[in-house]
Image (cartoon, rainbow, N blue to C red):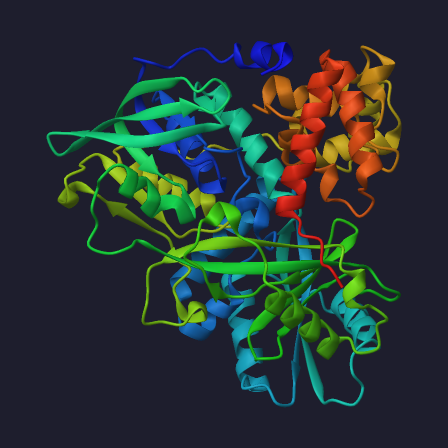
Length: 535
């Protein structure tokens, strides 16, 4: 380990012998939301993540905040109502990260879903969500889309509204900061080797810091296993025996394509070649197409989209847009994640409930330990409140201070605070909300801080510095893939990686050796996450 890395790690004091009221294992959207809730309730809280916050299922999702229109098909009105309520709350409190998005539902004449059933479902969906139809805008987008569709087929197009969180990694980072401000201790790159159990009660965890290799014994009154698809592994390592597996892993894969001429601004919700629902969504100046549903019981940390899944998604895209001049060679990259759905071996993946539940391990000899099963981006907040109530915490809902991220006066203030351009200020506002002024203020310190991370982005080195200082980033990959996720963009290339590493290294005072090591590790992680499709 280089001297630079040792200096960084030494800012994380040992936790050996410490005691917390709540220990949350897992730093995805659910784990961070739970830690935030517990810390705000005044409980001493530890949040532990084996890799980096939002690096697992959260960053591999379809990135939409939706009420679950498909849940209506299964009669799960309660899940739809909860999702729509949470969607409304997120849109109000985090307008810089979550924004409304029009969806166009496209069905051909062979669909098993009748037009009458769809219209009835959409009416009910709007009624529960208390939304208007936005008819004029919808008609414009429908006309634009219909010009691209296969004119040889009888197609029906319906409109409805949901929302998008383009970068759930940023929502996790924001909740992480709020957790720490409320008193939580957060540790990424720290493995839970085992939950310690004594006298049929969970009493703490054994941790290993991935940087130093040091092992710590930490006490906890409550242990929350919010590791998603790793939930069963945590129990197995801790010799906590459940009657059966809690999670039935289902792999979901996506492909990312370039935009094409006439690309609609609305998202498209349609049927794949086998009749399953899939999305084609404008995302990060590209198109996100997904997702698949494939049983996967392998290590969730090594999940990769298969060639068959990539072919399936591409064929489904061509089925909808046969006129587009997009080929397999145009796929920017593909990625996959494992949904932590409840173990349901007798059900098809599409019919397994998407509703979360809390598994109490008291009857299995581990009282005071709860495993979170299921969950999704939209309902992370309500899941966290439910979990806090389960362990006896009560608190009144608190309204967040939110700002309009595109308010020109706000943009001007950010630009002035950092001595930066309006475009850079706008990008900082969109990713940091109420913290934007503080992030921008770092840029005023030097020209190095105001430098763009790569020539194609308006996001700057000051944002990387804030990630290391305030958002628990420990590596270059933590920054470029999750805190300031410019490496997900359409422009990114090896030269962008080198530019970003050099500029961040200068600002951090890294040696050339350490900068080179960070660059190599970042490129390895990016390649493992975002698979290049070989034609």
